[in-house]
Structures are given as C-alpha cells and as structure tokens.
Length: 100
Length: 291
Image (cartoon, rainbow over all chains, first blue to last red; front, top):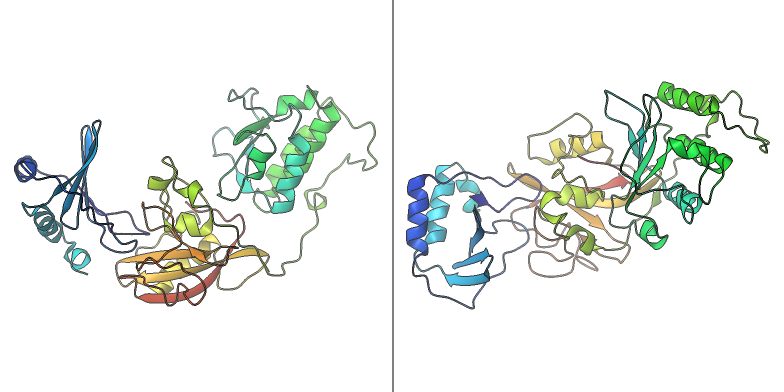
C-alpha cells in the first residue's frame, strides 16, 4: 500500500494486514465499471497505489483503476475504498498529508 | 557523459562527468573506430584496466548520433592497438581522458595511472610533447569560472521511460542526472537532510554542488517547499519554460492547473499545490551528480 503524494521524498507505504486485505477484496467486489477516470494533480495527493501479485490498483477521485495481464479497467468506488484508505493513512500518521 | 576509471580492487571506481567540449572531443576520438567497445567482459588484473563511458542525462543524444552505444568501454588492452586505431591513438586517448578527471579523482591516483601508461611497452614515436615525466599539475591548466547559463532542451521522454520514471524524482530531474536512486539532496556529498524547510534542503543541495551563486557552466533551477513535509525542484529549459518531475510521476512542463510554466508563469507564481513556500532560484552545475 503506497500513499502517492510526495515529489522529493519517497512516498509513505505500509502493508495491509490479512484482515485489511479481506476488507479490500470485499469492497472491490461488485464495483460497477466507469468511464470516469480523474487525472490527479502533479503536486500533492495523487491517490493510493496497491501492489498485489499479478495486479496493481490505483484509487483516486472516486475511481478504482485495476491493471493486470488482462489490461486496465476502471471501476466506480461505490464502497468508499478511498475514504477507508485515507483513514488508514491517518492511523499511520499521515493525516496532515491526506487532509492537506 | 560519465567516465568511470576502472582501476580499483576494493574501493568503488571513481567517476566524473565530462564537460561539453570534452564530451565532443571524446566522441570525435572514438567514433568510427573499435577503440570503443560494448564488451562487458573486463580483462586485466590489478591497476588500470580501462574506462567505462555512459550517458546519464536527457540531453546526451550526441552518443547515439555518433553511432556509439549508450555505455561503452575503452579497455586498457586497447593500448596495444586495434581495428581503426593505432597503439599511439589509443594511448593518446587514454592519457587525454585521464586529464579530464582532474578535480574528481585524487592526484595520486591520476599520477599512478599516468605512470602505468608511461610504462606501457607502446611509446610515442611522433609526439613533440615528450611527456616522459608527466606531473599531474601539467595534465591540464585550470579554467576560469565565469558564469555561463547552459539550460538544455526539454526532453521529458528520457525521464518518462519505463525504466527511468519510477526511480528518479524531482531532484534527479532538476539536476539532470539519472541515478535510479530517487536522489535526495545531500546524500552524494555525505550531508543527508531530514528537515523539510528551505534553508535545510538548500544547504543539503549546496553540499552536492547546487549553489545560490553561479560559477562556470550552470543550469537554472528553483526550490519550493511543502512546509515540514516535502520539497520540490524545477529546472529551466532552453525552450523558454520550466520542467519538473513530481516524484514517480511523469516529467512535465505544466503546473497543477495544467498551465505551461513559462512566460508570465514561473516556479515563483505557478500553481504548486501544497508546496506553498518558494525558496528561490539556484544554480546547478552542468554535469552535477546526485544520488
């Protein structure tokens, strides 16, 4: 799990616990596809990046983008994944960054 | 263009960046001959084994234009002569390339390598220089340090390549040196910094060579701060605008509002998001390295 936000410093990152991984899968289940993929700004909060075996997820602006061997597809974040991850970031001490 | 002197056994080999005129001179010496080789195998025992030359910045297209590989070696074995060059050509090139390391390599190392070359069985037969006893101070004269601004053309493609983009940040981009280490101000000079304020980041960069005053060939850069959190750098291009690379993201010449950072817009007044503090403009020497 990576908080994509910095320019000079390395982005903050942490590992998801088994329970958090299960919660992520639960929240990803059934998300509807969307054509709306917001582009993050250059400087500042650019979303969350989750690297899993075989795929990478990006969560930003109400959209979850999944990239794997099948290609890239966008899903609407109707289960509040971004808010849930922002809470994690605050728990890990990065509240001032996500709330900037 | 980075030259690495392959001579040590225990310590890391020293390396330095060639000045523009030296870069062109080296290309002129090796292009079209087999003096430069892509061979990765390193032969030779202890002592001078040759040079490795590689490109490290986005404006170094001269190597490709000359038909040379991005990384090539000039092996000490070449001092015996080869296809397209004589033994004297090779020795002359090796001795000349050694002089470009003055200031970057310890004098005693330069002297030792020069002595090894002088003891080579190949000798000059047609030189008027008669360098039987080459002192390090004779290798080349010191140059004046008048400020010369040499901003390079915008080349985002170099930084946005798959192998480069995730491993190089704003500091790499602004100093125009690909280290693949997500470089931090102060690291290469041994003065790392953890305080995200103008004075601290600027001082760390100063140790690396990026100063508030200009001496010699330099490029224009600018430093901004997200107070207590992070730093960001910009670099001016000869195209008339500023470029930057926010962390792992792509290099670009636009600000957070999507406007090109040129004309009336500059790092001082463009949309910088949370990087609210403009620390000022500085000078990054051409060829400056970061890590």
